[in-house]
Length: 308
Image (cartoon, rainbow, N blue to C red; front, top):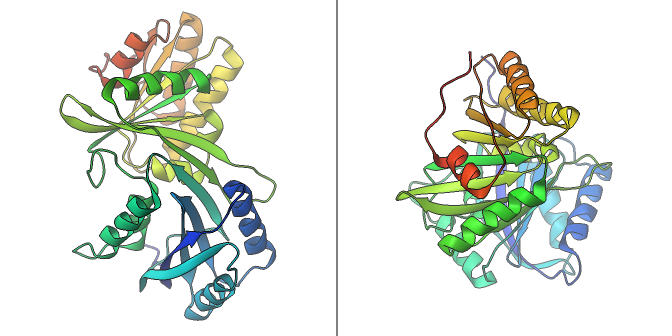
């Protein structure tokens, strides 16, 4: 068994002073973190509701070096405040990953959520503090008990479906962007909505094939119970989508239920067989159009009998 590396973990909140593109400001921070690397330091930076949240892990010296360097950038942020500092197991793995969370929340609302996680009892680990601030639950729960995900070849159609669900329940959509520390890459997006389905708090997440391969997105999908995969008409793109799903399944400890839906029986059957071989378990598939009623059945209905 590998012994976890013990590091200094710090979470610091500060008020943003960015007037232009926040995402470009985050990319600038990523470039500085990679090109002016502090040895042994790993970090993540988030923007939400007029606030920045910086998560640092490393030696005391490395963490304090970055905090001192960052505190001088008063054009970018003000009122920096340490909300957590402790020694513990390392979690972060990259020089700097960045993300944004956008939903109907004021800076004052986010400040209250900071206070809540800072003073929670029992004390929260940095990873849980970050999760609660980065992935707010619109239902007032610490986290929804049930999680389902929708991955499709047509991102716009999937988002439109979830937007209709959100409108039906009067629930806000939460939009997120993620980028890793590879300077040659841009960001990927994901969307989710929290709904009271049959009285049970349920998170419905929508993401693209490209986003599914992103480590931060995969982390946001932990404990997802079901993935509905909406196949496009082209066999090649359907297999590419299935390959991304298989890659996600191989990266998580608990394999979720996987349900395919596609209009072409041959494509659905081929993808089902491919996923069966990749994930070493039976996969259900449905041959039908991805209408709102059918997607509701796939996401929230009883599972189909498994294919042999």
